[in-house]
Length: 325
Ligand SMILES: NC(=O)c1ccc[n+]([C@@H]2O[C@H](COP(=O)([O-])OP(=O)(O)OC[C@H]3O[C@@H](n4cnc5c(N)ncnc54)[C@H](O)[C@@H]3O)[C@@H](O)[C@H]2O)c1
Image (cartoon, rainbow, N blue to C red; front, side, top):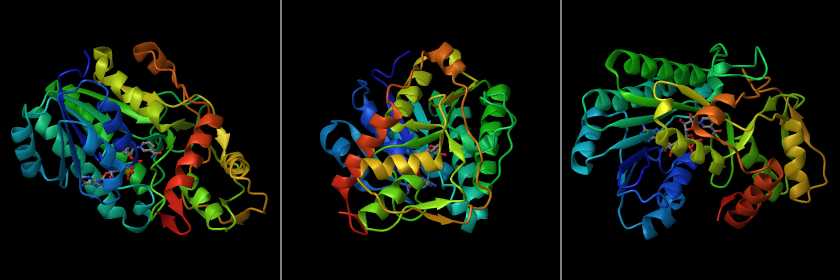
């Protein structure tokens, strides 16, 4: 069941992972790509190349949580498949927990209701490893308890549970992709940025990289192009329906080692700046990806060394002192 000839919507398609998914879809023989993004963190330049080159693509500057507006788009565009990636991110939830929870849940409810009411056929919903909280067992399989530590993670867990109950109750065609930490070109380096873009930006600005706590927290970092490959495979394999699949590498790295790898790649030899641990930060993450291997033959192709090289090269080209060129 490939995406060939399908009319595909990507919510959050102007964001980091969404824009890579859009790029990937341009090579999948799809009939139409529809991007829905409210540009909370999305950027036009993330999708510029796809918009300029793909013959049948449309951008809606729209809140994906707005059911009626989304229904109108569905009717006009005759959508088959939705990849639901729109999100208010983790760091926003430290400042705006209520808005983060409301928006994330309402976005998911909107795409679920549209599917329940037959406005399209298949939903691939994007979860996050944050729903697990810190590892209680290693490696972390999909059955690991949900133990969210931030309002963002709680909203993501709620979305997953609601999506699973819609599948169970209404028999909708739906699967959940649960990526661990993504990295790669186009990850937001502005407000609410992740540690990799912040570190690269600081080194470019001649500042010391910041390590929160001792940097001994671990993450399973997976390159963004491998993640979108996982998403497409999950769509293509019917045996994933109703299931959650971890998408990661099955390898862990400390934040300190990761920052040192970036520093080395960028030729930075100065000191690191140690600051207080971020509130509610997860201590350890290491995925079990056996299910994704078994069901969708998922094999991450990009080594951490290659991924960091490509990521640093991209930011060097696209970031100047103080931000994007
Ligand atoms: N980045 C990671 O490391 C990571 C890890 C695991 C899971 N995820 C998940 O992947 C998905 C994409 O995350 P990302 O890292 O690309 O984030 P991102 O912030 O770069 O992209 C999210 C996009 O959603 C848009 N958006 C926010 N609210 C919206 C709304 N109401 N309507 C329409 N668009 C809206 C934003 O403008 C942005 O373009 C999310 O579901 C996230 O939870 C991300």
